[in-house]
Length: 211
Image (tube, rainbow, N blue to C red; front, side):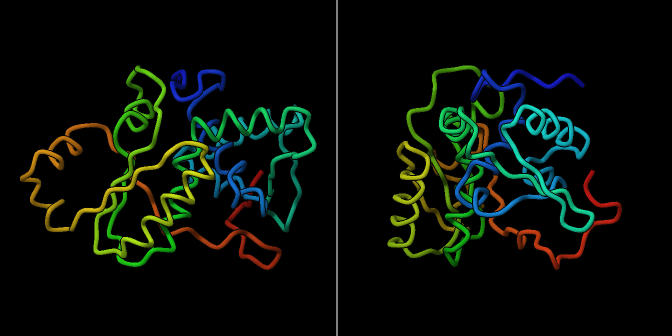
């Protein structure tokens, strides 16, 4: 199936490429290489699709690669002359889905988290104006101070304001007020907070490894 033209960053080939690059250009991605299979999981894409994108980016010099056992680990080439420009484009368009799970993962009491509003609409393929800020909904019983710190951290990393709203699980489930009903009726980007340990030299490889 031909990939749809990405609305969040039309200069890129596809949403899959944007999501893969966001994982690699984000602060946690820059610290350690990622396996192809892990990138496919994080980007919610098939392994062959991610392999094609990674091969193109390695061949063009935007990514570097190394082998650890049977795993093929890729990283951003920070020496590439377009590194800063590409990182700005990628993180502005796709950074929220890569950065927010890591920022929120440190906060206890979160039952679920979603991006909603204009960014989620663009990610779902709805045309419209570029989002000026990122709206996030956290479901659970959490410390407001931790949420404020997370909002500030995410805003700094993404270069635009991140607004985090908190609702209880009961209020989210009941959906009797206008705010929750509106949020649920519009596109939502669910954030997966539990992240696996990065692949290292002693990690167990998947059957067949990464090509």
